Length: 469
Image (cartoon, rainbow, N blue to C red):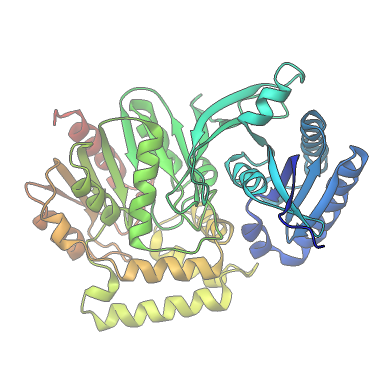
């Protein structure tokens, strides 16, 4: 007689996946694959030596099981330690770093494979880990706490994709530092902490906090990268100056930067939900909201949805209407040409194609600033995501929302902006009730430190934010 039911067992599940794999392959597909192949051999060897069993590989991911939770933890620590050594010889932006999740749970055994929430939770925990780090469930923590010489950071209950209940998680850094945050030193002795939160659809959003004082939350815009922007000659003067007065909070929108690149949805609605996710993660009940370019429309929508949370609204170089709603044949023709350039040459080593975008963004930039922006474009997202982002930008229309903004609002716009016409900024200020409008002299879409408008830009924002709401 055939057996009925299914076979189940308790197992320690380890799930490892490469952080930012699409970004790496987008820059150098063959080179990344060669490194990955070598690293997968290392991971497999360590698992086998630790009496683990690799169940299967899925591209850049590895799923393994162990009879002992302590052994699984030691295996994960050895993997991260060994790969960190191998990564030392590589440039920072070319390192192949794994995130690892470990769960102890009841699993279903069928034809040599394991199924069920015991496995799924391990995969979701991996998404919560920092690159080069480890994230474990409370079931694992209960078994290994006190038995290993590592620092555990309690990151609390986490709502993860396709798991009905929240999962209590702990993060570990093999080097002993707090796993969910990484500090970056800069010349002003400010320390940027990068963390991650999970959007409602399971997408991992990277955000950072830096500085002390009252909060200031900046919405994401076209092509951000928390690390590159903080150190760049295009953004650093703005970010460092604001962080002198505030606890500055920034994030990378989905599809670019340190946030997840492999995402099903890139849309205006998703951008608003990402902002909501970050605002909830940082925990400030009320804060000023700063937005640049495309981020202005997202900030407007958020301010209308959550008027109780936004004390001030600062909008620079932005618009209410995407290119598809401006009734401008010339802009539509230009956009079609730009998307064609993205398809043709965005990912190439030769920066000639990306230079077109750079020349529009910062036409008055120095050679260093232009070179940096050229590199940012290739390193921050894939050509496919760049097109998806621009197409979503073209569909934006928040004129009705703008007329319902209640927060005190400051709108700033450069007169000769080649990316967003001056008229769009003026229209936005006229639509938002009581908004103050400041016209800045210049032609750079992103305000640069070496242009006359920079001191006034900073003074206007500081004065406005100092005014009680």
